[in-house]
Length: 397
Ligand SMILES: Nc1ncnc2c1ncn2[C@@H]1O[C@H](COP(=O)(O)OP(=O)(O)OP(=O)(O)O)[C@@H](O)[C@H]1O
Ligand SMILES: [Mg+2]
Image 1 (cartoon, helix red, strand yellow):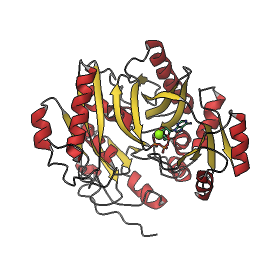
Image 2 (cartoon, helix red, strand yellow; image 1 turned 90 degrees about the vertical axis):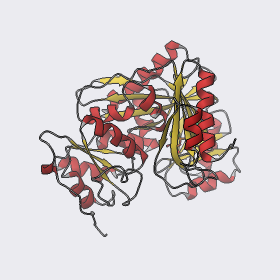
Image 3 (cartoon, rainbow, N blue to C red; image 1 turned 120 degrees about the vertical axis):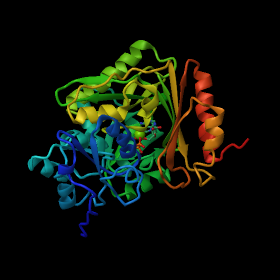
């Protein structure tokens, strides 16, 4: 394997005394948005980038290019950092365990992170402390899928790859024993998890930050809308959610963070089932799309609390700044030039906040998000939706 780190422009000894260096593996938009808050706190962010011009590499001076699956590359990258953290969850567990064995601080640690990497491991572990989950079972054959369907009262059921899925890729809705999706799922070559298809009213997300000394904070519970497996819109707080349910969702996320020993942000995707249950869908241990609203809508953003947590600094208030905040993702559409619509959007709504990720447009790709906040949910939502639709070219006026 070709081990190649592009030369960095400066080294640690050029930085002021005491400057913490946080290494983030992965150069996507999450690392890019982390840089905004790292700059404010005087923290040096170092990114292990997939290429010289990826989203975060455009914004971070110290962004060597290398393969995050190559142990020697990651070790050399980590050697200059106080702590290593992540923009994605794809670094192999054994590689991270060997870094820890070498004395490198990794947050979240591999034993926690594996629960965000492998959905079967996650389900098994959540069952040990009775975190509420949909009925589930690892399946090995089409006959297993039929047996599972019988156990949960019949089709439809959901099949998921245990590893490597994202944005709904690796999730199949199966309507019956002859559904072609069963063959597609098993052809993926990864172990498959079957789940009851939850009849949900909506999807919620609970985000908490937890630090090594055990301090934790919980953000307001948000509602997230998914389309074709991709998060498109988030409302904070989840409109109309009963306070006891919100507290229960926060408590579930705090319990999971504590049980698993998560350090940094933990996002718990949940279903609000029609029968009233709050069920855990999946976990992410990094800043999450359902927390982007917090950059403009909360006193301390998820990115700032992630940095504070991995450095074991006191956590900041997760409280909302306004009664409602709505974030709408800007997904690649017909227009290539994301700056073309800025004139209109910024002129129409001086309180709008726009975040562009420096990514070239491909259909459905997350290239940015917009946030609006205020007292009136309908107004806030209309402003955010309008801006996202205008930027992508879905509307023109
Ligand atoms: N058991 C279930 N019952 C009903 N719908 C489900 C179930 N599991 C998943 N879904 C739907 O499929 C979407 C994607 O599933 P999941 O979050 O597990 O996949 P993913 O590809 O890993 O997602 P992400 O992009 O969040 O990493 C969910 O947001 C939900 O809309
Ligand atoms: Mg998901």
